Image (cartoon, rainbow, N blue to C red; front, side, top):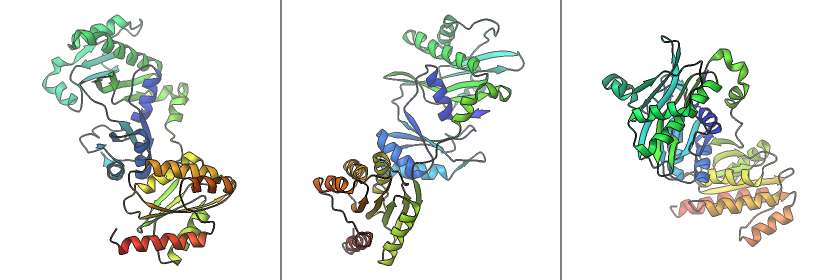
Length: 372
């Protein structure tokens, strides 16, 4: 069974191999929200089980929320060697000083594990194997004996890395071999293993586990089942973002917008028990979505608490890269506290959905009349 890079990196990190901060996203707006929370610049990477995604355009950089949204949308529309891209890995962008290559796999002909390593890693490693095979070190550990750290350091020395890197690179090789053994792998690979000002980091990861051994590694299989996204988002053709806590309430708010002559830009359901974090995440999505001129947040608090909503709104507005008018309808559980928090922050609100929807459309029409 072949595992996505994001899962392989979780395993590598668990076994002591340094990785970059990264999070999985399932749709463009989630990618933008994740990237905004992490900080820019970031790398947006297609999660596919085939190789060659870099050359196919499945790895792109973004230096702001707008770029993150754009490249995530582009990558999620791709097919790479016939495989549809359904997930993304959003990672911090590393300052790369050098790239290495190391893999542990099974040599079927020799009937034993083999370690391949080179001080020239990256997307051209396959060409290197054809044109300059002498630059790739090959080492056969004895599967009946323990693979020792000094053997890994000797591989690093033969790679030709500088003296101060022999021990760190050797340590990564040794840990990767331990992953290979522990998880009954066919292949455990890092390409590239990058040198940064902070040390060595696995910038990519590949893990293929023997199918017959999966019953021993149910935790690995479970990791392939990504969590359901926290919000349900649909992109529409209008310019008023509509957010509600519950599908019915969100649809009703959209109807009110259309009844008053406006056009919804989004359907965004934050669910019935939305937390402060979910409110912040949802607003961060629409505030950084270029077509949106006005946000209509329609909350009737039951399980959702109005004070959590208010704090989430304030946090999102403080962190937003662009100024967008927001109209809030806020009633329900803890409404007095929530309304007080908004008042102290100078953020207006309504208690009537009808009035709030009408106000949102009016503001939007005024902005369009001004050419904004």
